Length: 356
Image 1 (cartoon, rainbow, N blue to C red):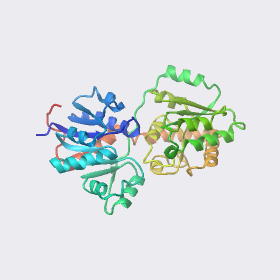
Image 2 (cartoon, rainbow, N blue to C red; image 1 turned 90 degrees about the vertical axis):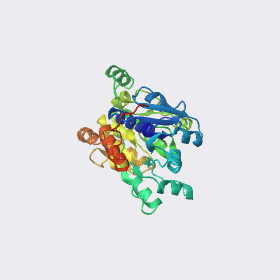
Image 3 (tube, rainbow, N blue to C red; image 1 turned 135 degrees about the vertical axis):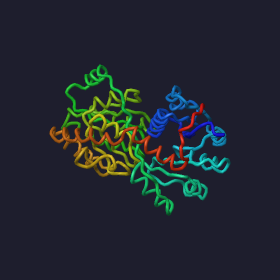
Image 4 (cartoon, rainbow, N blue to C red; image 1 turned 30 degrees about the horizontal axis):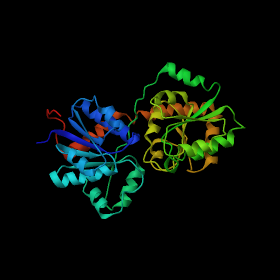
């Protein structure tokens, strides 16, 4: 007999966009009365954030897929939220006929080995975050048709007093902000630093802030070491306060499944300058709520930033468009879309009265 409606599996080590989306979905399903289990890495940020959610059984494991497989028992449906979890879903289906759903958040193809192809082919539903992810999956395996369910914005809190303190650090400055893991291969922050260097002298009132940490932090700090218009904030739990501090959000990614932080930027009515790659054009409409530029192009980033900096009316129009667009990416919409998928596989899922 199943003890849980849904078992979520997310074995990521840290806490990034995919883990935030897992958190939002689990919390949203809990509001619908779902009884859930979450198999996750012991000590990961997700464990702490879900600890008080009602009817959720937390099942921490190490790095072993075998341990994760054992911990995934007892659910009517399994939801795999990242690459290793997909294999757990397939093996659980072999052992107990539990159907599984896969959410694919990145815009590069899964592994090409026969086992990984079988794992994806046997999924009961595959979800992609954007048109770009959907196209990648269709090219990966003939006949694979992923349904698109975008990420949800986080409804981040802001502390007005802290926002005033943060703004006071940059008096008279036009603040161009970026939030994300410091990872040049995917996020492309080096090109934004190069854009900052190009306007350091000509536009000294523009200041660039990088909020986040990551494997390339030393590289990026070294590149910006002598620049007076660049600051690194490090990791922050007060993302909403930083978004409230920015005048413009810059997102120079080289690859992106969707870019969930963009949704939060829209929710804070920020005009966006972003790379025209992956799923970003699903969120940012060029000329409406932001400007899209070619990837790995510091000159294009610089020109787009200066274009919005110099045109207050255009920025205000984009700010209004950003707020309007944010309404399409609520957690409620995302949860409802997943409920539809779940119940197409397991009719009536979530309607029984169980206890974890």
